[in-house]
Length: 121
Picture 1 (cartoon, one colour):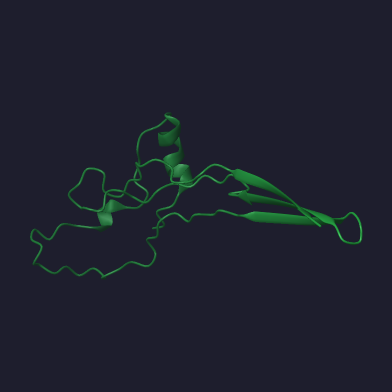
Picture 2: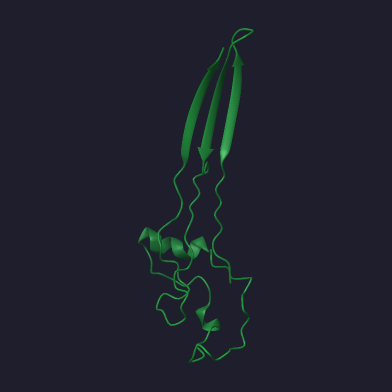
């Protein structure tokens, strides 16, 4: 029931396969009216969207040049392992043709980094 299955949506985003459902949509049925109560739970804790792993790293090194001066180097990396992140299922309406499908673009930023040098005297 987990809706973050990258293996199911990867062929669609690579252009080599069709758009597929990430959870079983047959488990849901239309009651015919918005005022008719069904027998389903209010929320299903097992149906989750994809997680967003994004590891950020920061490294700092201080070089002592003389007694009163030093050089500090700092490197920051965001999404350091360049993980792919997919969006949430867009079809949340049971009558929609894309119900239970992830068809939106990736939400992740590519790996980014910055370097800072500071001279203290």
